[in-house]
Amino acid sequence: MAEPILRVEEIRLAFGGVEALRNVSFEVRRGEIFSLIGPNGAGKTVCLNCINGLYRPQRGRILFEGNDLSGLRPYGRAALGISRTFQKIELFSGMTVLDNIRLGRHLHMKAGLWSGAFYLGRAGREEIEHREWIEREIIDFLEMTHLRDKVVGMLPYGLQKRVELARALALGPRLCLLDEPMAGLNLEEVEDMARFIIDINEEERWGVTCLLVEHDMGVVMDISHRVAVLNFGEKIAEGTPEQIQADQLVHQAYLGEEADVFTSRR
Image 1: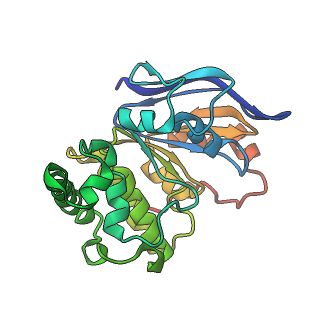
Image 2 (image 1 turned 60 degrees about the vertical axis):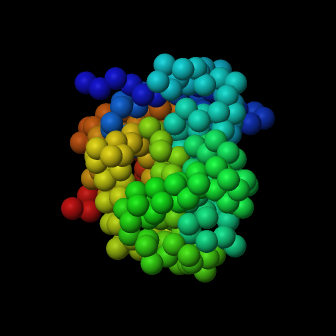
Image 3 (image 1 turned 90 degrees about the horizontal axis):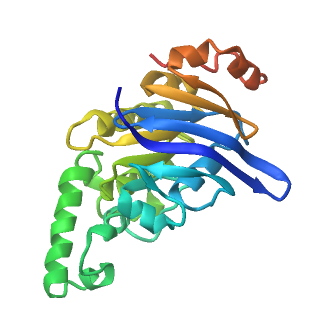
């Protein structure tokens, strides 16, 4: 059994009198795709926001590779190797695909982002090296060579989702938080995104551990190693996809959802 790369221990977060998370605990093992599911409003995105530092739990702690993340801001957590995508696309719509992806690489630039933008001395050489790495390792991998110079705001929604994944990969993460990467995609785009997630998890050059929040249960059950279920801010189940599909508490939490909510796409 692989060692945990992430430990979430008894975290609690409330907004006013409403508990968004209530004593939630789970571990994500190195090298796995771990999915966090639940009905709308269950606390899934709130949990991701606690992990990457946008929210601070009022109780409990989060450990990444044994390091307590308490007190670290989002950029400090990114520097440790935690990247993420967002439920609502957070790209710079007036910038090109390449420049949006390049922003995800800025923590690796010793000379500073803006110095590199003007190609000044060593900063310029460093900028060229990072651009070449992005084009070779990310743009080719995500099949976006023909899009590199396109303005992001002019792209279809599905391709913008792919650019956001590319920016998260530009950090060179060890853990990637994926917040509903399939939302709003058509069937072909969902299949492509699922394939990319499997590849970044399994290919040796990436080897990224993934924490996935997703409503497409077919994808979750197909690609996840383990799954945890939240409902009204509490964890109600955790296990393999097969165990989750057989859990009666999980079925009760999804009452009102479509009957075949757990149907595999295979």
